[in-house]
Length: 149
Image (cartoon, rainbow, N blue to C red; front, side, top):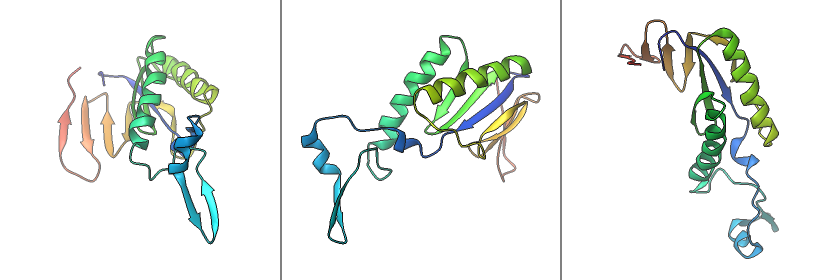
């Protein structure tokens, strides 16, 4: 995070469920379960699958890499995306481009958890980021860290 940057954030709705399995039918049998005498099989990435976070992170990293070529400064952690911009105007443009790309690839945005108004102070992943003061505070804690840009 750089001094004076404007921040926006995007939270994806039910992120793993956007990953549809397209691999061989033979392997899909391992994603089946039986409940109340009925058989079910996942079509999308289940939250309980041990590789779900890694697979999702790799997919989102590819989209983030594409955004960085524009260039848009993005940081992602699972279904949370932080967008960093040099001005309010660029922040809105970068946000629009990022949302469009995500929706183009079938992702749904959680409007309630996302922050669409450019700001220099943002609560993101449990940390309070203040780009004017160049500080990051752990939410609910007295600890603070100085951000060096």
